[in-house]
Length: 235
Image (cartoon, rainbow, N blue to C red; front, side, top):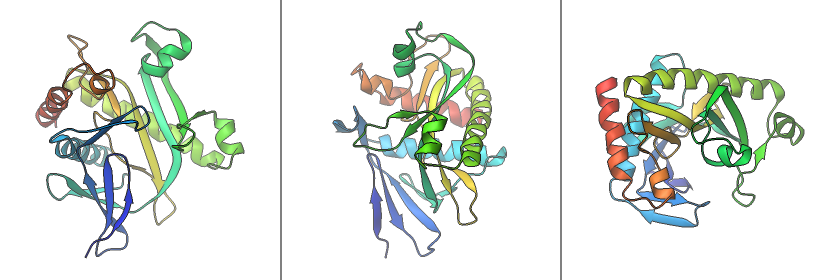
């Protein structure tokens, strides 16, 4: 008998017979504006589950320790249980979104080197951006672990850029989350999907991610399915 232990904006976490393993169910919920806009989009959960499963498997095979174990059906996967670190790590290769607005850059301006930003995970505070000093001073994370988060994020970025290049997709930016496993090690957690990445077709700059939903620019699922199709061909 499994028990629901946590429910987020788009996923539900359940216990399993193994206390060190969680079953993660990907729902069809799609949110924007800190969850103020919430819609059910048919098949989104299944598509994201498969995309994230494939990407995490690829990262595991390329030297990145993650919580991912296996995909068990269309909408569910098994993950190692971790203590989540309350920081989102955002890696930016090009200027877009809030970064573009904050600095007044041109859209998709190439950044001289990848930018790593940290955001404090707190719904009531709307996930504010924090400096390294903020994160350490607020005791959100120890200094050495923060350095490791940055290094791990940049490693994931290098691997994913190569993968998406093979798919003829530009990896503009993306969000990562990490957790601490039972051995005290930092490993990659949560998901990597068009929900958490900004992805553009290299030839047309067409959005293949959740920006279509955020901007109310039409049906986002063709873009998600295109990413899945190209991913299957690339891996």
